[in-house]
Length: 504
Ligand code: MSP
Image (cartoon, rainbow, N blue to C red; front, top):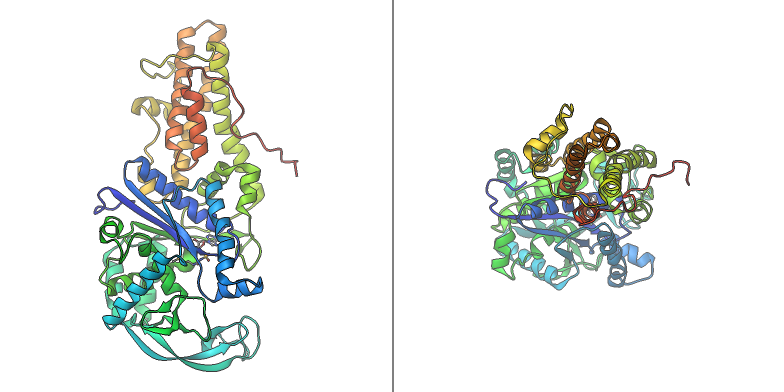
């Protein structure tokens, strides 16, 4: 969704993921959606920069490392490849991968902090609250349950320490006005309305952005006070600019900033729609053009999360079904923005239905007939035509337009599921066309010209599908293209072998 003001570039990001455990389906989903958009706009000729990465500082990581008896750096170095490998397996086409432990990021965070401190947006103050020592977490009065920590139930202590604060409160009115006057800023509308309501009902309080080193060591030291490290969220958000040269390469930075889309799930919308634009505005930078929050993948009715352990392992999914089938399911099964429920039964149903039956069969039958009736060689058509008298509006539309549906309106509307449905309407219509024209009968009757025209139209549909499907299923796009643009077309192996529901 490049906006009016976007000329020819598209900068898209995923959240940077915590490395306290291995990636799961939720991370895969966000990254696949972002990849699909990046590929789509790249194919349309835009200059695309697609960024993903890992969030490596803070207490969570420090604790996870301690639990493994490792230094935080060694621990993160070990986990990061599991993310990189998954993105490779899923054919994610990111242009850059940022780690918050990289010097380029650390330098940018320190620069931004120094800037905000110099402009009077950071001050030192007293930070107090109820603190659970074993959990190392602050709680508000309201969160305390039966006098104890809501997480572990143990008693909490009242604690007070000196910390640094960022003046969010100063920019409350600016942000509310920005959100209201930029209807595209937060997507979808339900999420936008939530943010507006939140801002209308709650004056923003200043954000505590430091942690004393005595309590947390694993973070970026503040440039103006080495006894404190930066709060992990403040550190993490800056990745979106540290990766494109903030404070380091003004020219590169001005090419890509502002970001066109930050993609994430609704759990971290507040940080992206409230803290982040204010941090940027206070530093004299433009806010991102769009912040997009999708729903959660659940198992049963519960959100999948690493801490609950109810996760689907994306690597296993790829091993079992292939990257494209997994990508297809995630992009197709849920309306972007809504929650989705992951069930193996519905996955296998879509696999057998949409992939094995619809697309797989179309390719297989078409190649088979070209091989059988034409020895694999089919001249290019003078013009595409529908068999006279065939009632098939979808393919008639294909012939008339000279191709499948334009997916751009769907992609602008952030509706990959609907884009795929539009592609599948043509695929299904082509299968129906095979039944309607019965090429085997044309062959028997010696209607050679009609048979050729029919096969040419089917091949055209498959070659056209190869192009349009690329952002969603890159390997399938290559396979279709290879098979149907070859000089001699052969049947080959099925693209999506049918799953036997009885198999374990
Ligand atoms: N490190 C922060 C993000 C900092 S961005 C400047 C973080 N990391 S995370 O590893 O917890 O990832 C959260 C993101 O992962 C979600 O916003 C979403 O993109 C994805 N998902 C994690 N679990 C998910 C589901 N169960 N369902 C859908 N997406 C989920 O928060």
